[in-house]
Length: 317
Image (tube, rainbow, N blue to C red; front, side, top):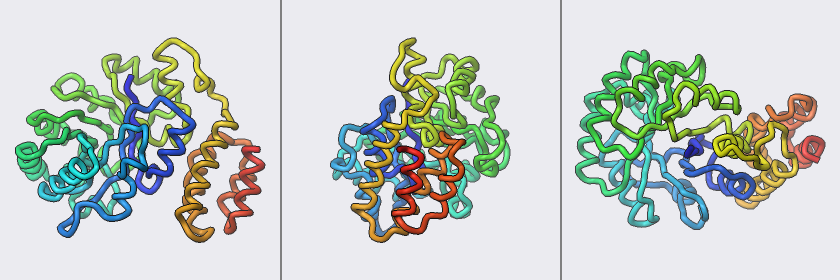
């Protein structure tokens, strides 16, 4: 099983990725939070920092691009290849954010299948890089997915990563496995599943339903339990690793946390900015410590780093 780390805007940037990669294994590809080219530039300074090879050593990185303009996509993909050496890029057709969707980007682009078809026709006539797509199954209804699949199958996508929800679901409701099965049965593309795999038991249900699937993208599941990819790969191999237990390895989690915390403090000024980043970490990692609600509340309320440090010290030791 190949396992990919999903892009999560504002969370899984290069500082998070480096800290994760230092302490946990099992990831075959890391996808960057989306890059948003426009008429003036392919990448902004923050996006450049996130894709710089020296900031991503030892990892297979796939830059994700968010746009509905073929010329912008081509400009960004060309710069990523020529300047930074990336031979694979990913098109974001999955972001459900209203601010993105109202501009016809992300999952919003799925509402305009004819324009999407023309977009693909233009980029595949000119692009040298491999192109994968991360997509939802529609905007309002799963019935939209059949036509979208027909469009995807017209082009030589390197991979098609499917999150089987529609845009209006956001992250609510249950992923539509019936729609994903339609892709498994009919699509000529290499498929990857994404959506609501939080535990080993979730993974087992997916494999029982779709034994032919060899690629899996994890997002919030890895934020909640950074050892999840290791656990899945250990199950696949029939062996045991340090990541096979559902119990929390506090020593590794502390190393991961401390590396990320140190790096954020090195590049950010002021307690507020660092705390914002670290509180995001605990929104997910806090699920590993249901018995520590008092300290998790102290983390949420912390306005100074020393307050945060005290609460984290109680949890991680």
